[in-house]
Length: 150
Image (cartoon, rainbow, N blue to C red; front, side, top):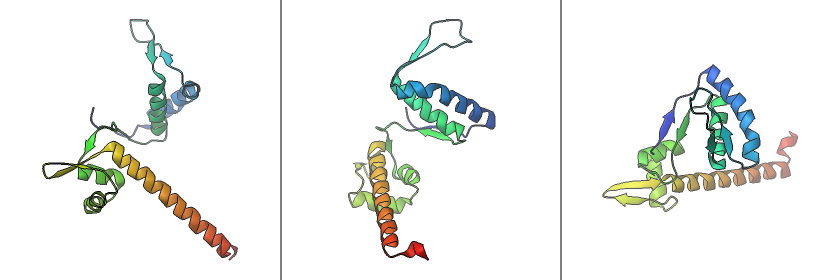
């Protein structure tokens, strides 16, 4: 499966998603499979969802409840430089600099660079951690200098 883009939900779907999220949260917390009975189906056999799928479903429903569109991309998917730049919300030339400096792993297919979603997300998480640490340092320095007392 490649990327699956789902548009933002309407107001009614957001409300349904909010209610469904509340009902499956206990199963996610317990890391338990979830048995679902599909009322409209002629077959009355319950559908069993594995615990990991229930957790993923909760995340999807939360995003829908908040009115967000959803894109699902498996970690092993290889992205073009343009797709990767869009995910990081940076320009393609800037992404190329990150790749060539070794900050993000990639491989070449002919003359084209390919980045796995897993490597891109690892970079994004590391970058976010570094940003938070720098912000915490600035806050501490501001407090030390009394800049909040003004």
